[in-house]
Amino acid sequence: MANIGTWRSITQVGTTEPFELQVSRGQIQGHSVVTIAGYNSNVDTTWAMITPVGTLSYAATALQMTVSSSSANDTSAGTGARTVVVNGLDANYAVISETVTLNGQTAVTMTNSFLRVNSIVVATAGSGLENAGIIYVGSGTVTSGVPATIYNVIQAGFNTTTSSQYTIPAGYTGYLTVARIGLAQDAGTTLITARTRFVGTTGLAMTGPIIVANNGISTIDFQYPIAIPEKVRLQGEAIGGAVDNEAAGFFEIVLVKNAD
Image (tube, rainbow, N blue to C red; front, side, top):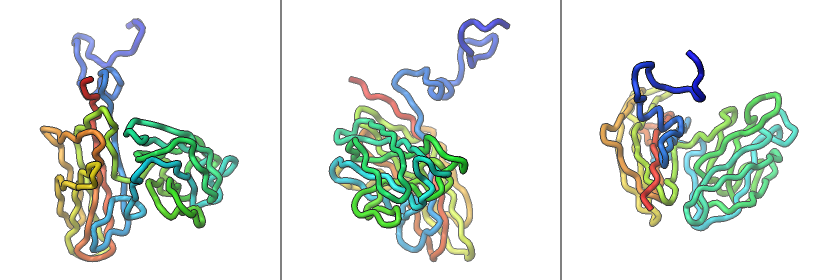
């Protein structure tokens, strides 16, 4: 069959394709998909965010944050990550992005002022093809690549953010369609509890779906997706009945532009 100008994802005799596929292909105006994945390998008996560093901070006002790595190999000519793209929100919760050339454990100050950091992605790397150390976006004094205040991270070797959190940009509503939580223990039979939290601009946090498990994975496919208003942050958290637990969190959100 001849190419008629573009590849189509429809049956040869049909005239439609799944709405979800059209959104992923960017064919539905004002709609986009956000996937969030993170993990925490050291969940103890207090609530912790599902991030490699346990808890992230959130700036009260937009500021020029720094980017650094725990490894000297993550630098402009190193074997690890060389450049990263930081995606987030400005003072008005509008989407902004900046590409940063790494300098190992030495902090690089960004040009733009960020209020929230939604993701970090390795754009280029050396022969190792991945970030050699933990990459941090933060502020304050940086010691061996670790800033005093941490806003988001990439775990070593992952090339993309490993934190289960995301703030909805201004002018959009997020619809939570899937929540998947994996909980495990190195040893023991105590329960681990995970929860989703929705944090507004005042800091007030509302608790969403709660999952309790002992070494298992739970998935919630929302028949009626949960609407998350603009500027609200979604985050996954976990707590163990005993120490030394692990938690992984995955969320899928459809962003829909609000009517003008």
